[in-house]
Image (tube, rainbow, N blue to C red; front, side, top):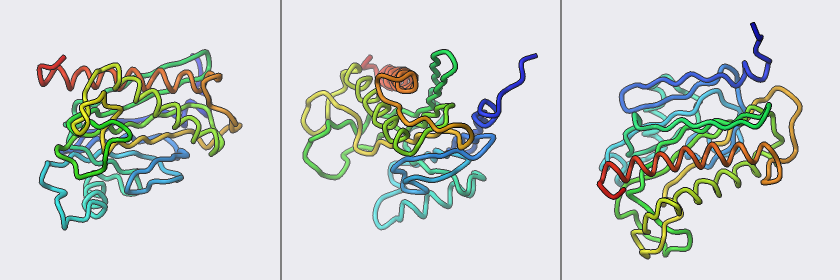
Length: 229
């Protein structure tokens, strides 16, 4: 029997669903980066939590951070990187890609009710809907490479949304995402930290492939539910 390496063991995940919550827990603490409103930025964490909210639950003067922290605690995910979504968390998509010994996995919820194009004029969201995704690479990365991997993941998400042909609610031009998307990148703390993760690397290749597939499938399911596929 093949024995799992230390990195493979550290990369193992457990998905658990609760009442309007989805929590991805790693076997060991990971290095993460995101712009999440709870535990965002660069952080070392062992879990990422999606919290599903209804359209009216975050209207002013509600403090979205306080709501998210409280709901993460209810889900048993204190300390997790927190994501808010109005998308039914049971619709999550799980996609993976590998190139020899480099593997990536993307778990995403895809809602496009708030579809916008980068560069559209600012303003309040007319509808609720967002893309939230966690992309894990099973190779340790420097912080610089983790940011580069996030750039690749962002490009891959955008490419899949452009391919889906969803128009911006504001300009009518092809949407490149939504107004409230969030991407979480995660990489093991153990192992030699790779310094590059761009398009010319196997790391960049598997990150893009996993993210593109997850968002493509999620967008297709969202459109099919609304009869616009």
